[in-house]
Image (tube, rainbow, N blue to C red; front, side, top):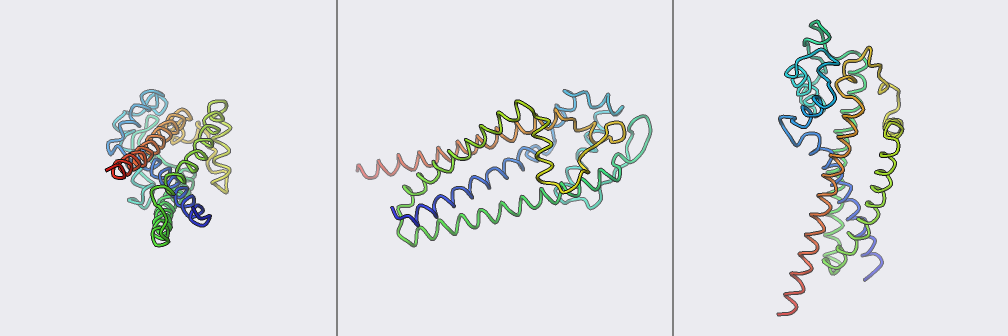
Length: 233
């Protein structure tokens, strides 16, 4: 197996797994069009009591907010009954921060497309070079999977020890301002999305990610078994 082929295959599998991670974010966040997972978390963390809102109104705000984040709404503004009076649920800081979040999320989806295109190009190049695709990709996937699982294990331990610290580090890495630092006394959005909400969402994303990685492993495993049976004919 040539060194160039190994490098191309490893890069392709790293890109595929990174794309799977981004897809896991999207499915965990948007996979349920009715946002049933969100509703269960609102009930779990007594969000309606903190906001003095009906659950149906909270879900209406959620539906609008998620439409904004995916680019279906241009302005983050919705009037509803909150805290005992009718008013816009979102304030200026909410809009500025969520604009950053939307750019990050939509940028991630564009990055996923780019990664998949690059991975496909590398795999095609391997085919043209006469590489044993099954063998080289299977080995490359195992290496890439091992690296990602090591990172996942590290992050899982870190988040379980101090989720708040990890949550802050994440925001400091991906945002260039402090707009993500909300005051629950002033901001309804942080009352709707408490820290526990994000903790449960991280677990949900992680489970989707691990599930997809296992499915890909099963595909490679099945490919190997099929190839061995054909050789034994």
